[in-house]
Structure formats: C-alpha cells, structure tokens
Length: 253
Image (cartoon, rainbow, N blue to C red):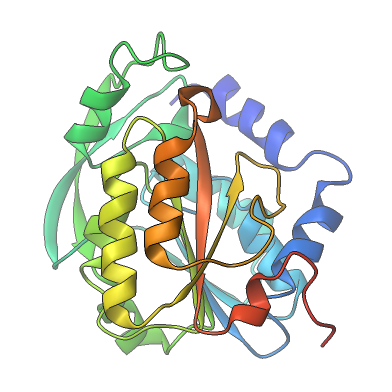
C-alpha cells in the first residue's frame, strides 16, 4: 500500500477541529460504559471518537497496513480490541480487493468494483491487489465481545452481506451507502426493518449532520436515497430502536 495514500487519509480524517464535531455527533449513540463496533475502522477517526465518549471498541480492519496505523494511534489502549478479519454473512474466507492508491475503498464486493467502473466521481480508481482473508460475522463478534450499543459499518458495498450475519438488533447502527449501489442500500434497509428497526436518518458524505428534518421509516429512506443525484456520491444511513436518537437536535442526556 502506498504510504502517501495512508498519509492523505490521516490528514483528512484527523484534521484539526474534526474530533469535536465527531464527538458531538456520536454522543447521541454512545456514552461511558457502552460498547461500539467500528467495522471498517480505516484510520481510526471513529474508533478514537468512541473512546473519547467513554465506550470500549471492537475495531475491525482487515488491511494490514491500516491495522498497523491503528495500533500506533492506540498506544496500547486496553479499551480497544483490534480484529483483522472481514465481516460477512457467514464465517469462512473471502477475497479483499485492495486499491493501493486509495485504501479507503478496499472491498470484498466484486459488484462494487463493477459499479464503480466508469461512474462519475470514480474515475481512475483501480483495485490492483488482492488477498484472501478470514471472514467473521456480527453475531460471532457479539458472542465474543458482547452486544454493542452502536455498530458502524463502512465496508464498500459489503454492508448487506455483513447485516445478513446479524440476528439481534443493537440499540443503533449505521451503514454506508453509495449512489452507484443504491440497490445495496435497499437490501440493508430491508434487513434492518426485518430486525425491528423503524426509525432511520441519513447524513451525506462526511457532513456529520442529519440530512432529513426528522426520522423516517425504511420505505421513505429508500425513496430518499433513490431520489439523490449521482453527485451526492455517498453517505451513511442511521437506524435506531429509539426515534429520539435520530432527531436533528437530540435530547440532552
């Protein structure tokens, strides 16, 4: 993996002043004594945010170079457990396709790579290496570490596969969506509705703010994603068992 690509990600995701914005946003989901899963931890901005909020963290990052970065950031913090595996529908093995110039978009989804080919905003992306890695499931992580209060899923088109390995709903979770794979977002919403989630919100890009004036149901969220222009590119959907956590201005703890 190119060292300059990792350095670029560190500059972006650990930019001065960003930590306070992250903490203010995620405080609605996590507090002292909670457990969080950061699936697709990348360069650890969410992982460190969750720790600052007082939560312990299971950080899942299968890319070896990024896992080394996470260990340096943690400096031996016992409140974080690093897991160097993929997360999917069932235990086994799968191929992770690496983009050495842009490690943010490593993926286990061949459909994601196909959707990116020629898509506006995705020009020049090349998945030039691959490695076969072990796959675990969200249920297996829960069995090993406990039920989290919040799960963050950001695994480049493999989010629905990961959710197929979850049989009990945590209090809240998020998954990344892209406009090149709106069908995957629809699959995720269906799986979450089946788990009992009724309240959904979304944020675009790295805005760290909710895009809708109030929570909505899964069908309305799917319609909202379908209506987005391609230039919206990506964002995160948030699902909660409690509507209050998804209000634009959350209630004070």
